[in-house]
Length: 257
Image 1 (cartoon, helix red, strand yellow):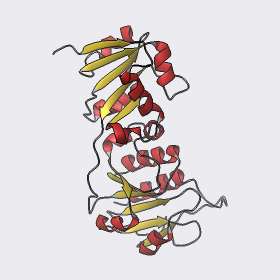
Image 2 (cartoon, rainbow, N blue to C red; image 1 turned 180 degrees about the horizontal axis):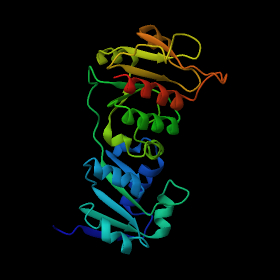
Image 3 (cartoon, rainbow, N blue to C red; image 1 turned 90 degrees about the horizontal axis):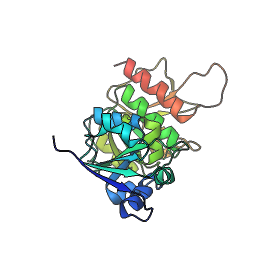
Image 4 (cartoon, helix red, strand yellow; image 1 turned 90 degrees about the vertical axis):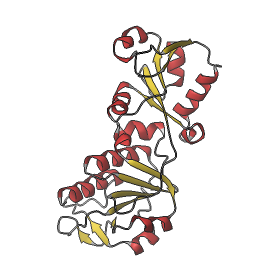
């Protein structure tokens, strides 16, 4: 196997460093660059397990001597950054000391007849990442983000997703009208109306619609829904966090298949 090239960088004005800083700190930079930054060994391992081949592997200078044992062949190109420079770029309070740059392709069109999760303007990155993890865990293979949702490949969503991205087909920037192409029943959550989840006959495949943290599911999608679903809350809370509600609903669908 050919040894990858190893390039040390110490200047913050280096062109690669400038691009990497944008990927790490700008939530939509991946769309402009066509690449995604994965920081930390957990995300890097998850990518490799799903047969993702990184274009570049990046290591902090102090970590590189140890990293060579496991990661020397991880990518065709290796960049070694000074510790101070890696910390400056990192989006973490405690920099992870390694990361991958992987190529990102514009997603394909909606796939009809596939179990899907629709994010209807869900804006919190932590919520979006958590929902992606639930989707992957419970057998949903397509996630569709309506315009106004958080950027699916942003660094914060990637960290919250913990590798789920690589098990899913992710489609962004979709208009409400385009969801008709899914050709599966739409199920929407409601805090005050509809069938109780534990009693409902859930169709499969289906598309669960998870709505905006404050406004919920948009009226146009509620009108198009095949079912409105409520989650029993015997403790008396008014509503659930959207990521928690998604986990409960997707698990119920997965278990009922």
